[in-house]
Image (cartoon, rainbow, N blue to C red):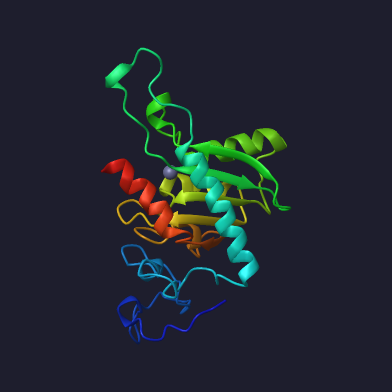
Length: 215
Ligand SMILES: [Zn+2]
């Protein structure tokens, strides 16, 4: 659904510039420029550039799936193996669930960067890997990735490469988010695969889990 850029003047190229803005659509992304998703952080109803939240049925499904992702985030494997004692660094509680086209839960992932010492062990990447292993293919078309926190650049890139059809995330991540906050990788019109994106789903609950961790 294309939205008219009414009232969001700061994000819009004013008349005549830039010359290379061949596509005047609101969600056009230019390097170094704020992306439309930034305004989406304002709150419900302000999510220009995001997919239409749609009928109640879809919203309810997304919220149900987000609750499952939250469950994965907070009940992940205990961090710090035996003997690590107080020196163990806990992983930030981020959970992801990958659903198949029919809504079947294919795989889950929880951020395990500290647990495994792997810089790529983000929840989304782990869920993608496990689902791909299970399906024995790297293409995850028709699938929906649900994650409690706005994906980073790595995960957004991985989601695009996996051809995931829909991405649903909870809390916005203004410092590193790559799905509307700092970058907008998934809706960059230069890419040929752009998943539908729904951001800020159960934002209060998902933010609360992170705040509690960092407190
Ligand atoms: Zn990530």
